Length: 190
Image (cartoon, rainbow, N blue to C red; front, side, top):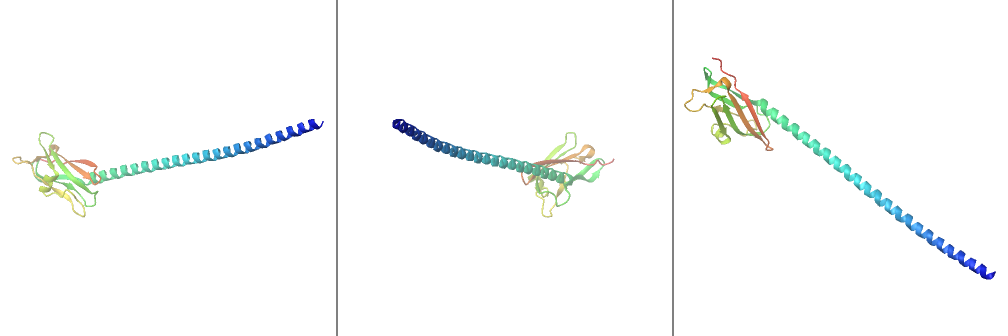
């Protein structure tokens, strides 16, 4: 019996050791799972933060684009509503000179780059920024200075036929955007 008792004690000791090792391994596995769970949670949190930041950046970019579009529309409306073209010194249905420019001095800053005049038939004349400056136009209005001047008809012509006269101005805003505005000149009554 003593042999059996020793064998039982040895078996019990081996079982106890195996149980203790199993508990250590189980504890290590639980720690590894906890570390993995923490790492997964941190990764998810980082991904969520990155997604939230990307969504916020997109919303800010969309708002900036909408603000720019609204500003461009306002600038175009401001310039268009201030553009004037009219007759001066008329004879019959002809105007001996046209006044062209922009009313007011508080309009959006711009550079007048071109003016074209067309009578609806074969007569069409364009003036570059340099030609307009030579004719006395202030092509960069601002600081209380207006942008207007007179256009004479082509030499040898009796005048601008006002029956269907269109004046078109091309302006470049400070941000580089180009705007074209057109004004129909009121015909002279015969």
